[in-house]
Image (tube, rainbow, N blue to C red; front, side):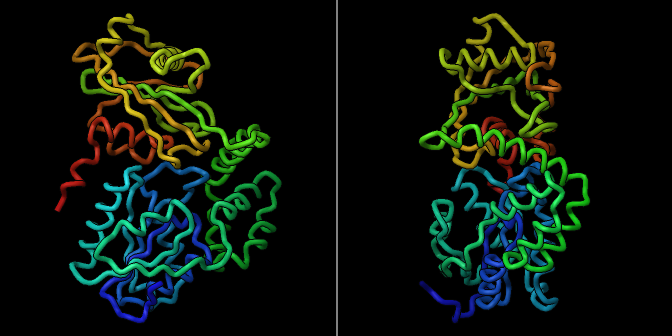
Length: 355
């Protein structure tokens, strides 16, 4: 393990910080001791709020700033980076952002190998790695469970009191104030729905793996989207889709889900001719439900008039949206559905070649 006794030009500390806790504060102080400039990479940026990612990157940056004295706050820079669900693109985005902030000086990457999600620490050759080890037995997901679970029995004060040794006092103050915002009860209901759904599988001999399908329907420069009518993701945009049934192929399943949620149903020959690609999306963290592997089917209906659609089943609305508008809607999508669209339509491709 390397130690932070050598001064570098910049230290980089990566995390989601949902919410900022004492283990992360210890690592941040280590990064501040290693270099005059500390770049905090805020992962999972630009996503819709969810029980896993409740706080915007700006809110997380403020949470981190509040935990430090004023002099140390001035040495921080924040770099929000989206989840590309593609390590190569993510690493390139981090490198590009760090270079724009710190220039070409020496960089130390501060972190610790927690589990498989920490392998990104090995993806930055040329940077010094400071593996600081685990800083306390603190689990951010458990912290969020206590926070959102408190809403059900009106015990927020007790929940925050129980976290007093796990998070800075300023984080607890932030959480108390944030609970008064409209986001809190909405996400608490979402958290409860997800908890109940996972409880149905609690007696299974091993964690379940779900197989789903999604339909990417392109027509005349537009794409068909639904608004989810149920948890999880209630009120967010999504692709029409759902779970694979026992006696279906993925192709049969995607046509059924498309018809059930949007009412769109063309002749089978037309749909087969329009099918241009099928792509599997299987990142372990792509869905809040757990391990969900989806097969996204791209259909291109050409320059015709878009078929009429009518929302039903899990969808509260169905509409055709111009593809050129999708990039500005990133924070309104359920799970990784924006990134599925990005894969097919290159919504963020310009950022890969910037500078």
